[in-house]
Length: 335
Ligand code: CUA
Image 1 (cartoon, rainbow, N blue to C red):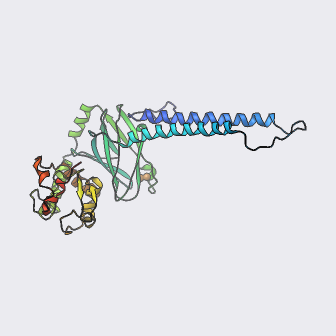
Image 2: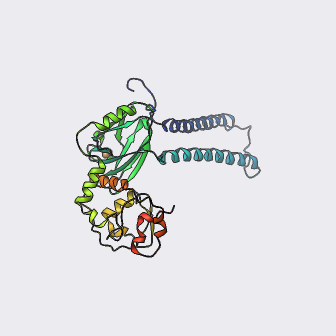
């Protein structure tokens, strides 16, 4: 990794090759036209330099073929760039369903990561090789940007909201992690490393470490402490909708909107509940803004996401009967 000069960082993820190929194509295309134009310009300067022997030909129509050529060729080239770029972009933005989830919080000036199984790390991220990893990112203070050059991925971590990114490392090793958004005096020191390990080794690493509980257990503890349980019980008829099986389902809100209960919605529902009241319920939930840290919020989220809904198919038939509890979000997912 160090010592050998190369134009680009080494490639260590499944998309790195695709990104680089597209990049070289763009560079080659630009270089080709730059050289061509410079050459033609130079040739014309020589050929058509002012001399008494030459008369200036008046310009004006009559060059249809030429006009078409220099319109159609660039159009085709630009569409190739667009199509190719869009394909790579969509690949990079669509995490596979089986992606392993890791939660990351940026703050001045460090990266804090927690794994579902409980291990936490600072300015380091351990991941297994050959497995897609999805990061859910947020920030405690200002905008930071999670950048791993060897993976060719970069994503802003924005305070007050969740962003996500994914990658699949395909080479065991250690790689640079940078903050790529100026975030204050020690921005330049907000660096770390990504450690890509063999799966077995990674499992070993996961089960080691200090005795902090796993995210789900921590989340469940918070769920009790903050009193979430008293309203969001599994049984129907409680003051708040049940949260079992809620994640990624559609929710009908009191203001008529239908939203998907994703990470962002759950975050909003906890911090700003009045904006996310589920249809059929009273807006009685207090806000938890300022009471939970970003990391605790992620634990709570991980716990809520882990709650399984009732498997009974008959539950869907009960929905729409008009009773309040029939509007439970857990029954709302038809898609
Ligand atoms: Cu964090 Cu720059």
